[in-house]
Amino acid sequence: MTTTAGLRYGWTTGACATAATVSAYTALLTGSFPDPVTITLPKGQRPAFALTRHELGEDSASASITKDAGDDPDVTHGAVITARVRSAERGAGVSFSAGPGVGTVTKPGLPLAVGEPAINPVPRSMMIAAIAELAAEHGARPDVEIQISVDSGEEIALHTWNPRLGILGGISILGTTGIVVPYSCAAWIDSIRRGVDVARAVGHQHVGAATGSTSERVLTQVYGLDEEALLDMGDFAGAVLKYLRTHPVPRLTIAGGIGKLAKLADGHLDLHSGRSQVNLEFLASLAGEVSAPPSLLERIRTANSALDVLQVCQAAGVPIGDLVASRARLMCEQTLGDAPVAVDIIVIDRAGTIVGRG
Image (cartoon, rainbow, N blue to C red; front, top):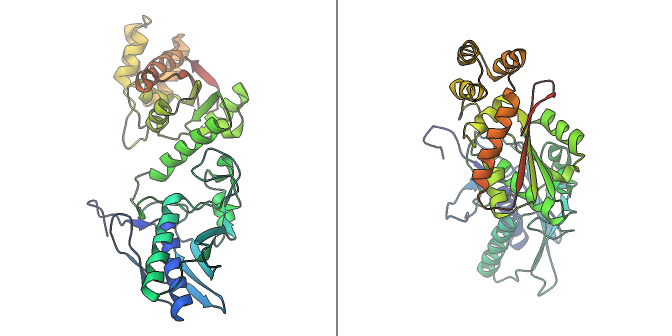
């Protein structure tokens, strides 16, 4: 299955875990593993998954699927996801546990209780529905224990938000549709939302959103914010602001380089270079507001980059960083609307030096 741009869709960890569960439970009931194994996704699609490995024991069965994220640059692409299914006592229903490589929730604010395995609600419901359907088909009881594990999951998790969100020991089993849309950035945006949820749940009154590691370090140095109060915003200023509009925290500080925050100041909520550009005419207009001379305005209009603008303005004594910060704050306030969130902005250069505040 491909997009209109010719990129391949992929499958979520939740879809892979469900497929592994279906194959393992079928083998527990019949002695045979379906391979490939077909599942039904929440929107009705029926993909098939090849097994990577399988094993049938006396009272349990396990099956593994290698995740294919399609053409999306997903950190879990190629991860091997295993479901081990074991019969439970009559009336026990379906229970879940975290095997090696799957995290455990240790902080409030997530859609799972503290102490639960990091298997999100939609994947859980997919697996429960699949177990019920198979049990009815074979005249069995839908009472099983499902353990999900991921090869090298603890190492993979270090490249995700999980440690900051308090999900320890491995990755999360995620997905709402079962399908990974290439370059949709849905996982990143979801992580931003979960970061806000955790910060609110533990009572933080001030969160910081950074475009990168350097600006995050500046936030920590200036405000001493705890790690769980820091949001890895990246290019997704709009995702932060729109979620805080309905899930407010009293104070938000956004920190980033002059280039990205110049785009925010100019009204862009997606700061990716492929989706928004630095508007030199806009920067010249800001400098004009403080009576910069015409020669400087022309130099700004013909600059090579926002950093170039910063340097020529600094040499001329024009506070372009402060001007960008003030206009970016105004853009944030407009996006937040009536939400009770106070905003301030920190603009840095590439070395991490603060060059503007607003």
